[in-house]
Length: 384
Image 1 (cartoon, rainbow, N blue to C red):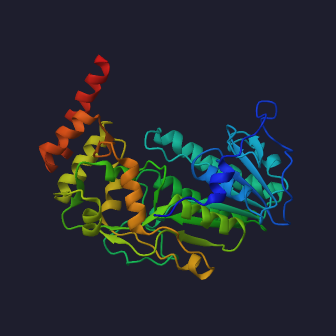
Image 2: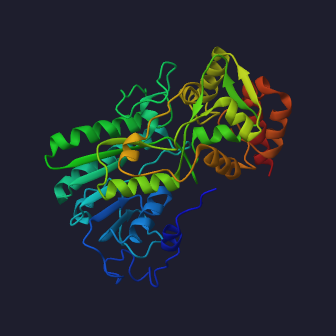
Image 3: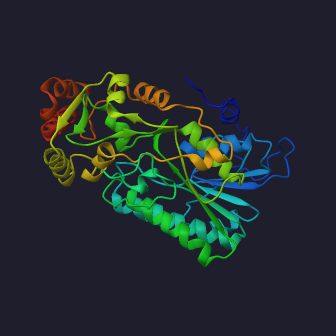
């Protein structure tokens, strides 16, 4: 199985000798830099943003990295600015940047949906406006291949320029669609500003989404008559694709993920987890009811992405010389290792005792009995 790039590991291990004395780290000495671009990264202290910041800071092709987040991260060979991306003062922090990679998004399942949308949409809008005001010529947005929608008549694979047919019924997808709309509108409102959009498939590697939680269940839910197809993207590969975009080796809108896809039967064989098959009306109805009463974080719309294909071609990246370092099989194995010991039923994490009971009870009971299991878990926590 592939491992993270040594440059990323090395850059992440760098430590600032005096972060308390210089929290923004505006003028740290470093190795001689190339005449390459100055790249700003929002959301630079965590997740994909942290990995990208580390990789860019270690690259000889980048002149300078400007790291923006609400807290300071661990990459010392970058210029840090601490603020909320919704703050208009970000425009001043972006001065001198050639490219901005905007990764400050909240797609947490547990975040209040209204607060999540306010942060994601307002943050993107502010970054686009601030970038134009600061003279930045390119902004890179990272959304998801989920914007194509999961539909029974989707081609396998979809072309990267296929129509975006998703709706706002799945977690965070409405925000991503609005972010893409803002990205399309920005060059018209700000001539000279270019926008690149990167759409990863099922993202794995330190992520927690409705799709990764699917693999934490005691049984893999399969809706009768559906045609699932799984295409994964490891965060390592997303980071290298974002680097290509930051270096302007690729522009426009493109997808990133493993080559090809896995059928549901292959996923079950590789994972060793058996399926639970339910009629569509039962599965969707139960999911909707449980979400409506607040017992599960995932709306019923998330189920569509486990029912219908949304596999996408990654030919645009291939055309510029990029190749994924992970296969679908390897990413699935990494995901299973990552979620080992976690117990989820219908998108809700349970304690070990309840999860064992759910697995023993059978597929239908596992889904429809979620409410009772969660209540029991809550009572147990209150007794502790």
